[in-house]
Amino acid sequence: MSCADDLTADDLTNNVTTEVLERVTAGEGSNTNLWGQIDKDNVTGLNLEDVSSAPKVIKTWDERLDEELFVESGVDDDLILYIPFISSLRLRTLLLHPPAPGHPHRPGRLRLFANLPHCPDFSDLESMTPIMDIDISSPPNGTRRLPDGRREVEEWGLKVQKLANVFSIILYFSEAETSLRSTMFYVGFKGDPKTHTMDMSKLGQVPAQNAADKKIDEVADKKGSGYTTIR
Image 1 (cartoon, rainbow, N blue to C red):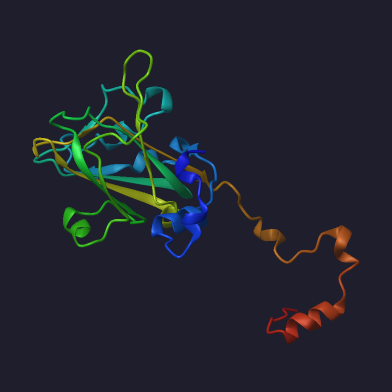
Image 2 (image 1 turned 90 degrees about the vertical axis):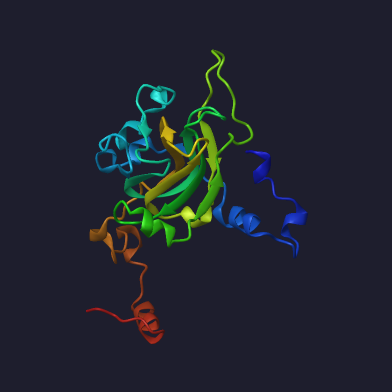
């Protein structure tokens, strides 16, 4: 657990901030790599130099530092990536591998949106309030280098409470160093995949070992409490 997750008594006084409340309500949870939950065939983007390149940044963990495949913006440094998931999930961390700090094609700003049914236009997003608006001109604290000297991917913490039930993410990159072009080599996520499903055929059934213990009086009690009994 990071120091950011350790809440002190002062955090829980009357001066509780929105950030602290989000950490309390979100819980620690898991931080699983969600590569397998991304609907890769339907990853798209807007203002791409290569219109079909958006899925190239959705790589396996072992390929995350490969800079031969990437997305790059077209006419300017504005770049949208639309990333749907195969099921609803909770996002905790955004993984990025952009160019190094100071590189002319490293975007300096990221606006994050969620749960749109398709890739939006720039005008759509300009009229919306993002869930997060992040300065990514420099890596977050804690970003490290591997023993061979390569930069590790950057891990950006997310507002978990606001991203607890997500089926798509929209990343709006802009404000590159030169304002001419934005480049991204890798995008990934960590969080909680929702793998549990309900067997609808068993709804309303009483386990055999408990069936004899169920009393008719309970049915009458529920009906009298505002429940509707189906016969």
